[in-house]
Amino acid sequence: MPQRAISVTRTIPAPAERIFDLLARPAEHPVIDGSGSVRAPRPGGPDRLALGSTFGMDMKMGLAYRIENTVVEFDENRLIAWRHFNGHRWRWRLTPLDGGATEVTETFDWSTARIPFLLDLSSFPRRNKAAMEKSLELMAAHFAT
Image: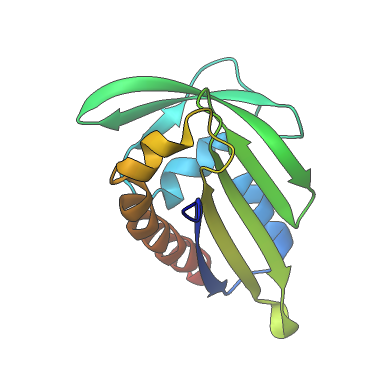
């Protein structure tokens, strides 16, 4: 069976609390989206996420579309993950470091998908890894200013 999760880790020059606050606010997600597909939060969603929150996002990958996400993992200032209808997850784990920086690990986990073998056969995992690397680059730049 193939491994069904990929992760990218980077040290970000900001405390975990500030990074988590950015991740917990859907309106901020386009700022750090390395895929270029996240446009804006859908109206009516929460300003700040918590365990069980649902939030919609306007997306564009070739064509515009909408996606509904549910927060399925949540540990304030340490871990947040959301999934959408197919069940795969985007997870962010924050580990505070000495000096005020934070090690951030973003994971695309399709082991929880309803039909994981379809993602095994697709280019999504490889493309998502490149997008996650870009997301962490954007996050580092965001907090460096």
